Length: 177
Image 1 (cartoon, rainbow, N blue to C red):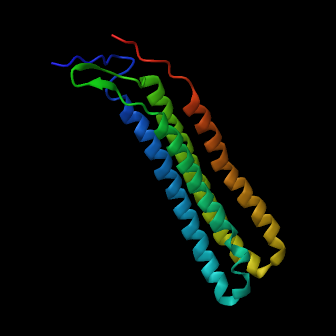
Image 2: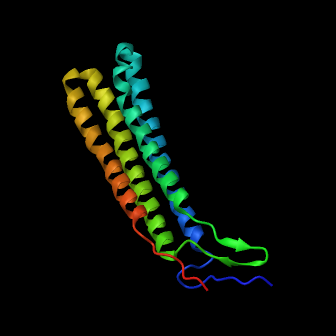
Image 3: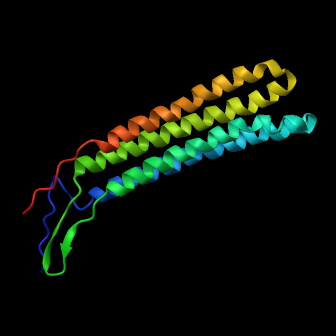
């Protein structure tokens, strides 16, 4: 029988929480990006019926929503690459390499970045929809719409920064048998 060195600090379930953090970052950020793209796209299409020349100028909210998905992808890759699989096996004892502290940090990191991306994507979608329609009626509103979109995008950027800080916090090492 092969010995296993899993303990309280490094349980066998720790990688599950790390991978859930990576998944949460990608899933929630992409939900926000998809909502922002769809909602803004509806506004662009509605506005484009009466003002087809303004469609390319009104694509900005869709691009900004897509960037939110990239934030989630970055967090997922950073977290996913920091998860370490146990070493050993076969005739050797299985020794964990990934602490529960790191796992919970990575879960928190993914939730922070993902839910911030979801919120930012929703804000971009709502502002983008109303903004492109309003800009078609009154071109002077364009700068105001862009400023609001920038502040909405900043919410996702704050989540990305905090998530990267949380994912880089040291988790220590697993005690050897």
